[in-house]
Length: 272
Image 1 (tube, rainbow, N blue to C red):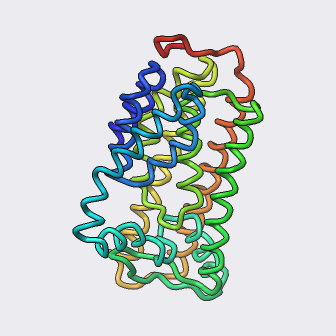
Image 2 (image 1 turned 180 degrees about the horizontal axis):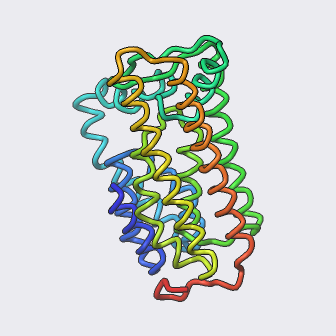
């Protein structure tokens, strides 16, 4: 999935729109969430090529999914809606609210749900709905800024922005979601000024480290230990809040990059 997304962004930088669309469709079929990158990539494609780009992308999805829809419609529907009934997974941004509530002495529970671990607390369903709404609004805001020409059309940067917004607000916050973001980071660096590249790498490395610590701490405190203590929730609260702030700051950093480095333009070969 990550390799296919890398190829989709790379070949868009190279102006090979057909291959980019094919690889983006492949990445989306493997793991659906890379499809959010289309929201940014489509604006980089020249207007004369956009219809073809979308036709290839959705055509591949249709060719693959239509037989499944005919032969196993209930299975396909279950696969597409499996995540909608889930509470906040233990790594998600919404879980940070639960950890913090419990650390402050309020009610919150770690439960098993959908073959994973989740954090359940009063009002979590409402916060989940609000999180989805805010995610959609954030997507629309970035698209609005693109349409208004307030953001430069850099495919790798835009892809990473949409991926990070998804990770920030989606209720399933698995660390695996950062993998495609790490894969395309070298492509993002090509689109930034040299002075900004070390800061991008530092942010992505730090974010990856915190995600690893968050996951490892949960395994240690809630799965290996027989009983989670109040201190366990305090530790998870701190790590989850730090994770949330790092993702949000990285998004704003990338948006500032698109607004500030107007002197960096992609050459036909994709280099800066």
